[in-house]
Amino acid sequence: MNLIPLSETALQEETEVVSLACDQAMKVRLNDLGLLEGSKITCLYPSALGDPRAYLVRGAVLGIRNRDAAKILVRKGAGE
Image (tube, rainbow, N blue to C red):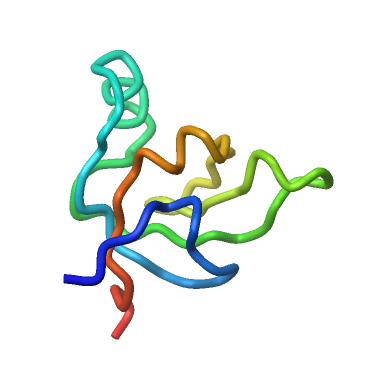
């Protein structure tokens, strides 16, 4: 099924969220921000130091730290 952590996606690559493997508090926070299973997510650009990176989710830009993005599993090829 070609799952990878969100932190390993390339810039401008559109993927689809498959699961959130983080603690419940972080999962609730991400859900509140619109990051749900099945959401399309695109890595837009890294910050000046590379962490966090900016992601486009449901028309909003979110800054997600690499350590948190590593717990978000996505499927490549969501835009195909």
